[in-house]
Image (cartoon, rainbow over all chains, first blue to last red; front, side, top):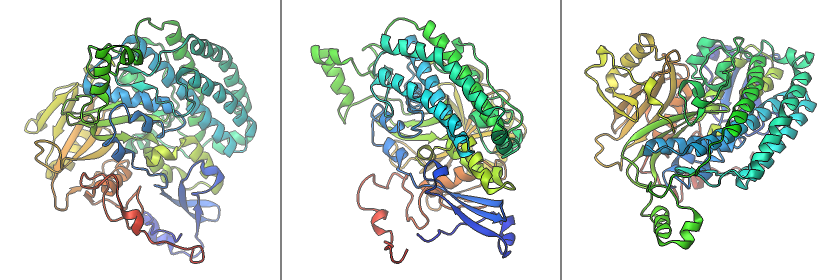
Length: 408
Length: 167
């Protein structure tokens, strides 16, 4: 393919005419790019003068699809957004739908959503840190991370029957309640996992190569983090003490005791440390949620007209059958207010929000997804200028860019 | 879901008393005419502490019941100190919907505005680099507009085919 016309930033346009500057195409097919991202780097020797990201290789029109799928169907698409932590996306989507509808889910459902969201935060951070270590030459670390991640995927399979395409939430509830087996698996995992974290920390915290390659690299100041709209671990590593779980408590986060992990340095190593600490906090939250899991139903009852009935009720009662068809037929469905609402959750990568416009019908009139990766990748040229080519992968790894969420 | 709103509600400042404002589920929205947009955003950012542009998006109201305007921009602002949120709406109409760019206020608006241009075809005057971001250069339309179909023969069939020998 010929290069598409890429315009460099204005002040660098003059530099670009200088004959000693090289242009290097990085990606979209490159082992260190994780997914299909492309960067056009301008190099002076090994120093990166400018980087122009080129994205869109995985664009599949998720927001357009949202206007043609109903509120329960679209959850299957949210699995494919950040495929490293699909459960967190499921939870974010249905939190937004329920906020538009103005319904509150039962306590047990909220607790289970917190549990799965925190477990998927651990999977996401394990991938981010494992891959970051891998890219900077620490292969063993990656194996430790993936081994723990495999256990979590087994838990997800026990919770909802799928490892990756979970589609676990429903409007007003969940697909399934947590089974005793799944609960036991989570308890076992929580017992084993702190040790894995210790091992991972021992492998990297004082690893000379890793620390040299990440400390002081890709520094993002607090002012820049806010100015560039960063959120999540990237912003917290720069000293922005913003965590939606604490600041705008949704679900049952108000019930739990946890710390917001921050750092001031804003470099790749700080982002690594924040993610490590967040996993410890997630373990704390899941422990509290498991031990205090309320009894009761996971779904709102049939009195709420927008909740899919249980399958046994559909097969055995006429009311269940009618409610089912009232909700799934293409000309019926959930009645939402003609209103607009924005609901954000603290996903592993940052603020994952949905701006929903309801037009009274069964499908969203517009469902904007605020993808954290998109906003963090926009900050990438700012972070990499002045560093070397080998730092590109370290900075990319520390931002944890997931292309499916980036391009949607 | 617990009610998020208690900390997000506050009296609207006196400067904006003339602006249309509404609230839903505890979220405050104000409507700003396009010619005052930057002035209002600047005041919100510099005087009232809404320093974070959490999101910028657009809605095409072509088929929305009782809609008076074609497009509605959504600036989703947040205050990182007090955790208040404010949604600023700006309505635009065909032809050539244009608003001034917010990049001088927030560097983070750069890609968000490019995305809105890409998918809705709204121009941001003064944007440093208003190229398409998700779709390829040379794509002819703006697919999140409501008059763009979900299915059918489209741009993909018109893209030039480059053979292995040429590439």
